[in-house]
Amino acid sequence: MSGAGGLQEALSALVTVAGRAGVAEDTARGEALALAAALAESAPGAPADWAKAVPDGTTQDFFDAAVRGRRWRGAPTAVLTELVANGSPEKTAYAEALAEVASAACTLGEPTMRVVGNASVAAAAQLRAAGARPMHVGAPGKPLPAGAPGTADPTGVAAPTTAAATATEPAAEAEPESEKSVDELLAELDALTGLERVKREVHRQVAVLRVEKLRTEAGLKSPTITRHLVFVGNPGTGKTTVARLVSGIYKALGLLSKGQLVEVDRSELVAGYLGQTATKTADVVASAAGGVLFIDEAYSLTAGDLGADQYGREAVDTLVKEMEDRRDDLVVIVAGYPEPMAAFIAANPGLASRFRTTIEFENYTDDELTDILVGLAEAADYELVPEAVDAFREILATTPRDSSFGNGRFARNVLEAAIGRHAWRLRDVEAPTTDELRQILAADLSEQPDEPDVPEAPEPPEAPDEPADAAEAKQSDQQQDEQGEQA
Picture 1 (cartoon, rainbow, N blue to C red):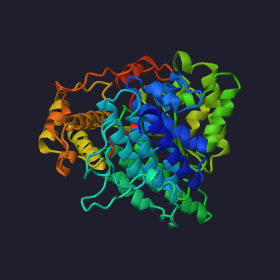
Picture 2 (cartoon, helix red, strand yellow):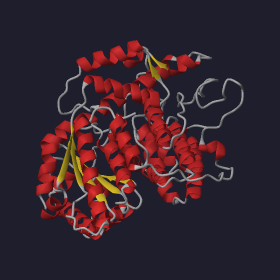
Picture 3 (cartoon, one colour):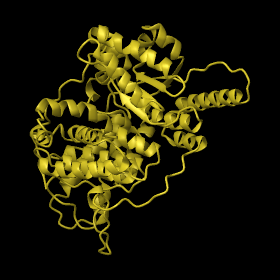
Picture 4 (cartoon, rainbow, N blue to C red):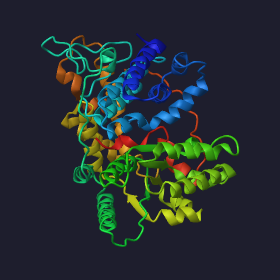
């Protein structure tokens, strides 16, 4: 099934799994629709097809949803993150249902290879977060060839890998996973590519908080140490990835009751009328209680033509109050470019007193970006042949490294485009081998003369204006979300 019907079918399967997991239908459906819009926003005709799956949906609703869903193109969605954090037995089925939504996004509008690449990476991110096996997303309107990952195995025994195949079956009884220890989570942090300065600072912060907790339990006096953090760095340097690990570490230390990560920006904190912003911000903070609230580009609340308005100030004032009221079971991490973030913290005395630890995220080197690309490919069950790796290094050598460079996002974008070209290259191969289905060639990393010439749909700007230097730095990568940089 294609178009809105395919998306409706995938949504139905997702909602069934969400019900078993105790997730509200509206929450699950809204999240899935945002993911589908973010993946398909470059496909001509996608807004109209998407709107058919949404009661009273409009083209503007599509683009608004796409803005919300971009962060999940390379990272687990908010609901999946919470299911994983809570050890839900439905986390794998939910991840598989999201992978089906990603596949359905490829059928919206006119087929484009870029959407196939976006969907493949997004599906892999959802499945990887839940510890599930990756699946390939085929070209729009064309089923995967026999033998492809996610289809029948070579023995001829069908191996269902999606929630659509299991949604009608009762959920099997499953033991919740044992929660990860602090040492296990720190090991995951240490395994990330690069980020040496970040790793040292997180280890130091963990040591300080662990000792503070032990002193309190022993009845000793202990200074109150703020747990809130400021992450500064250019786009794609792993800030969201590290925030997610920090939430788990704080939970393992007993400082947080749940350990989920809730990621928002200005548009999700500020309402359209005076008085509504306080309620909206308080509701967002409440959803993050017990975990970490991650506010990207937080300076948009206090700087610039839009940020300096009374709505932004109302959001900041509410945030400061909520941080105080929930100080025992909430951590807030604010992130963005270095200079605007310094101005943001200085804009409100309440912020300055609560954010005392700043962690700087440095740009990745060529070797680190190559490792990231290879890791992302492996996570999506692809293999870059040595010539493809060499081709990527050549691309890096000729790519300007100004403030608009996307770091890990750049690597993810290259992979998404390569996956699309790989699918186009195999379009006439009736029975490709497993190696052909997995291997990304050097030619897949460069535009081919016989690729379909499908223009990308224009994209509306994201909600607020930013300071001039930050807006210029973000211009070329505002479509991308933070989490594509780690495998």
